[in-house]
Image 1 (cartoon, rainbow, N blue to C red):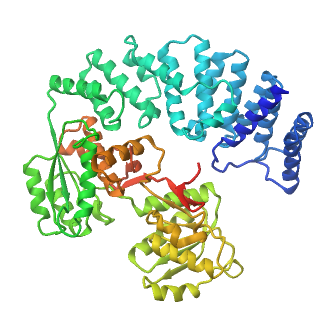
Image 2: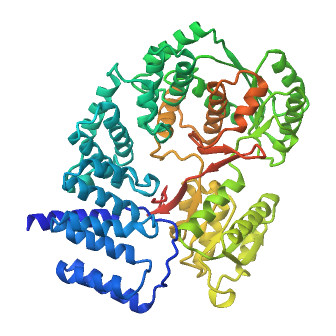
Image 3: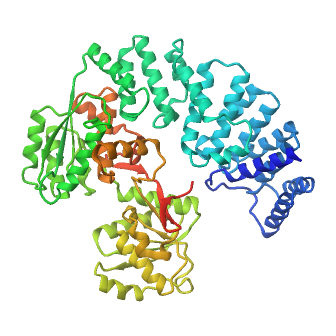
Length: 631
C-alpha cells in the first residue's frame, strides 16, 4: 500500500508539472465518443482501479485511432506499470508516448519517466542519454529538478569524472533558483538531489585545477549564460583559460562574467584577474557618451537613464562593472538646437558609441549627426523612424511591435483564441497598435470581428462607450478585447462597461497597464486581464533580481523601466566590446550581431532595421494583484 500511495503522489505531481505546449496536429480528430472514453478511463484512475484503468487506456489506444489523447493514454499506461514496479514495461509505454508526434505537453514528462525507468533498472548510461534528449524549454522548473537529479545520480553510479557530472549540478542550481517558492512539492518525490548537494558538487569542480578549457567547453554553456549556473561556468572557463596562458580568451570571458554577475561569490577574484590580464594585454579604457536631458522639465527621465547606466558600469557600490568603461555625459536640456554640437564634442573626446537621446524632439538631430560622423548611437526615443536615418543608428525601447507580438502569441498560440475585438484611442499611437494587432492576429489565423475607436476626452468617452456594441449575439462570439491605452483609461473603460453589464471578458492590454491603480480603477472587472511588460519588479529572473537589489542599495529607490533600459543599453555596448570590438565600425558591426541578449528587460535582438525586438514576459491580474502569467 505504501508503494502505491507513493506512486500516486508521483503520478499527480508529473501530470501537473508539464508546461502547456503548442498545438500539435493528429490524424484523428477528437469526437464526443472519444472524449467520453477518455473521461471513463480517467475516472477509473481517479478511483484507483488501476487494472481496469489500464485496460481502458489499452482499448482507447486500439479503438480510436491516433488522436491528441493517444500519447497521454500511453503515458498513463506507463505510469500504472511504473507504480507496479514493472519498469521495463513502463519504459515501452513512455517511449510510445513521445515517439510518433512531439507534443510539448506530453514528451518532456514521458522522456523523464523513460529515463527514470532506466535508472530504476540500473541502466544508468541509457538513463543519462534519455534524459539528455529532453527539450528543456518545454519542461517546468519542478520537472527539470527531477530530470537533473536523476541525471546526477546516474552519473554518480557510473563513477563519471567531475567534469561530466557537473553539468547536472549546474542545471540543478538553475532549477532551484526557479522553484525556490515551491520546494515543498519536491518533498513528495524520491531520488531528488538537494540544493546543498548540487552546490557542493559545483564547488568541488570549481576547485579542481586539473579541469581543462576543452572539457568546460563541452558543457552546454549557452544554456547556463544569464542564469545562476552561468556565474560558475563562466568564471571557471575564464580562470582555466588564464591558467593555460590564453589571455585574450580569458579576458573576453572575464568581462562577460563581471558584467553579468556583479554579486557572484567569485566576483572579487574575477576583477583582480581581469585587471591583471588587461595590464598584460595592454587593453585601455573605452569611452562611451551619454546624451540625456539632465536639466529642465524632462530631467527626471534623463537622470533615471543615467542612474541605470551608472549601475551597469559600477559607479556606486554595490553595483559592479568591468572597470574599463568611462562615461562622458552631456546634457541636452530637452532642446534640439545644441544636440549636433554635443555630438561633435563627444567625437573629439573619442567616444566609441553614444546612448541617447530619450526625447523625440532631440532624437532626429542627434541621429543625423551621429550617422554623419560614423558614431554608433543607441537612441531611447519612442519615434519609430529614428533607426532608418542610417546604419550607425540603433533604437532600444519597448516597441509596440514587441508588445503586440507577445500578446498575440499568447492569445492565439497558447490560449487558442481566434476572434478578437479592438478598442483603441483616436491618436497616432492607438492607430499604430490597432494596425499591428490586426496584422498579428491575421498572420496567426485569427480574426478581428469588430473595432471601435474613442476620444481622449473623458466626457465624450463615456457617451461613446454607451453606443458600442459588445453583445456576442449582435456582433458574433469573440474571445478577447484589446485596449492599447494607459492603465487609467483602460481601467475606466473596463469598469464602466462592467457596471453596464458587459462582464466576463478577457481583456488584453499594453505595458502601460502595469500600475497597481489599474486594479483599483478597474475593480473586479479587470480580473484576469493580460498585458506585457519589459521590466517587472516581481520577476524571478536572476539578473532582474540582482539588478533591483544592487540599484536599490546604491540609490535608495526602486528602478523603473527607464533605469532598466539605460542599464541594458550600456550592457549591450559592453557585450560588443567583450567580443573584441574597440572601434566605432566594429562596435556597430557587433551590435548588429546581438542576438537574444539576456538583459534585465528581457531577451533582446536588434532586427534588420536596427530596432530592439524583445521576448516580453506577460502579467495578469489575479485576486486583485498584478502577477506573472503562469507558465
